[in-house]
Image: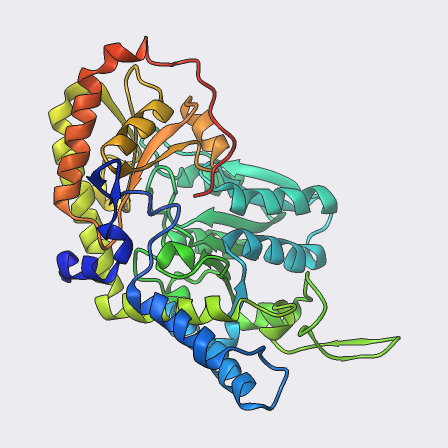
Length: 425
């Protein structure tokens, strides 16, 4: 196990104060902070090696190209891919999902085909498939959850048919923290010849990921949720499937040759990385992957589960004043705790926690159907990472206790406040 107190020294932002209190950052499911190592490698790239890639034989272009290409290999090894060219760099998970839905869906879906999603899907994994279904005349089905916030596998098996072509699902729910059985879902998909598309935005940063062991066909995730820069995402796909696909975005960098009458697409992954890519973002992501690899993803997962257990133990001190959502079996959930304080609107809780220096997310977390399924207009979400410590949770719980005591000040709980527009994460 790593020492989180040593880890914290790598993150400059954790030294700042908010409202006169030391920052406690529990919004890691939305985005994570960056260690000095990632910040430094970005500065080094821009000050020593910056140039466009694959477009010149001069020294800077060659150096930039080598760093960018190497980043594919670093990420490939991190998720257990068979080769570096299975890694497509995108803008983020949303971009990956759209690229896949259009590149694969336009070629393979037809009227009457079925796409299976889940009610716990983030909009980024749900909406592109709904869009492509509408274009191609396919039907969308949704898998329900149990009363404990676990994916209903019996419902999944009942909804699968010979017409099923895609099963897309989150490996971890960004609201409930539920960890789904990717290998089991992939087996169900493959039993009817469908592809299994795994949204790894909340799982890849927090646990060991091996795409070959999971046996999924595609995996999507974002760099900014795992210590990397914003604007860089990953679409991993089985090589044989990627090679069959034509690019959704076309233009510079996607072609091997073009005449006025013909197009020869570039080899993978370049055919899917149109235009000048986020070179610095890819290099920063590779450095973030190296940082996490030194810690060990098994250690990351174990530590976050310890923080969640500690949170649940402390929450019991609040009695029946708090409702927590997601599996009661902590082995089935990652480092996310979503809740509501009874009689106090979630936005109010979030704003008040900020006065204690505690940053959490409030709202519907780009998972509106899931909140509607739970009968909620929003939740407060605390989400942990490697630099969070128990002392921060103590402050968090004490703040909640204080807010509960002050409930009468809030005029009945603001129960009629509307949730804001979808907020990322």
